[in-house]
Image (tube, rainbow, N blue to C red; front, side, top):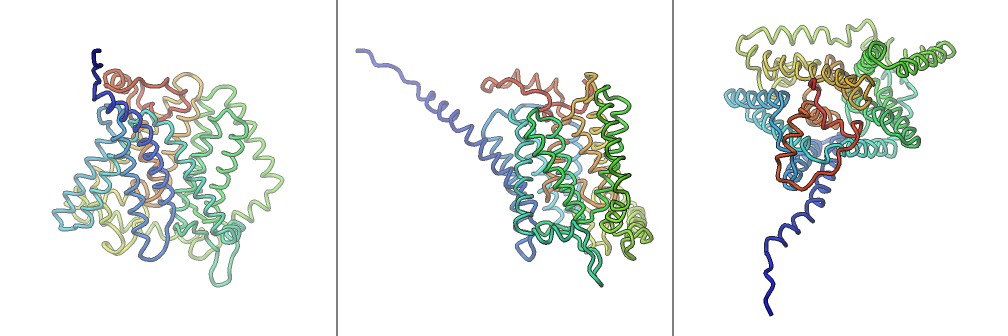
Length: 448
């Protein structure tokens, strides 16, 4: 009886195929845990460990995704080249200056960017949205369980004598950073509200969006509230100009409803906003010069132009803190100039602005607004507006900055290159592409 020949490589390939889904699951789990840990700002010496742990988990998520296979072979996009070059250049500047800590920060930022690039090229990239939403739900639940009384006290606009307005710090996070994280979270859930077809999911997403917005109010994060307002104004103008008749009708009805509520509750709303925005405060009120930011901005701009070498090279990543230059830089754009130099600072800013512009163009390309792409553009606008008052445009230590970094890369991956790479890659057959509103990560911001 003839013996059957057994190909030993068949068992290895079968085992690898069986392991890939498990590795991908671990990658998604690490990504979710990284987002969740990034939302905790515990005090004491453990703070740095938690932050570095969150960043390490994000990098590990990218490494596992690469190990799982199926990563699409797509050339680097312009945003990746700009950010990557800026981080490498900042590392070299810090190394020449003898700043070992800044050099390490630059390397860490570069690794996070590489992980984001890998994750953005996965076949399951659309599920990353769900991972972020689940992590945000866990953070919101943790806030409500750990700090229920503090949250309710702050969101009610409580003022204590000799202390002033009680500003909420969810899970120890600074109120200003809370505005970025939870203001961005409100847009993340509002996007899901617009795109999901199921009514109960819409209601749940709307509730979570409102809870995120209430966190911003409780923290009295005025920069984020202003950024959300300006983002909403841009959304209204775009819909009024390029939206369909149905979208314009919905916009008009929403405006009428809000106007009616404003007329009926005008006094109560005005009183609440005066308290929660701290408008009468001698230090944060309308006469405080944007809480002293205008003075700080003048000092920052003066420092940028004080030295020709600093103007072009900067100081290195995280080398422009108050402990180094003597005062805090409360603007991402001045901070970028101080850390990366004016040239790279402008290029990084342009990468965000151009991506947002092209994303809006693609969201109306078919004549009917694509809500997923449209809100993705609004998310970039929000972080650009908010970064005028805070230095969070390029960061890796909080959930929304990680989301924005991933979103920036995903929106810049060209569909034509994506299709050709998928056709030429020696990978298992792909599953059918999900609908556009589920696969926003596979669509570029550049015109087709």
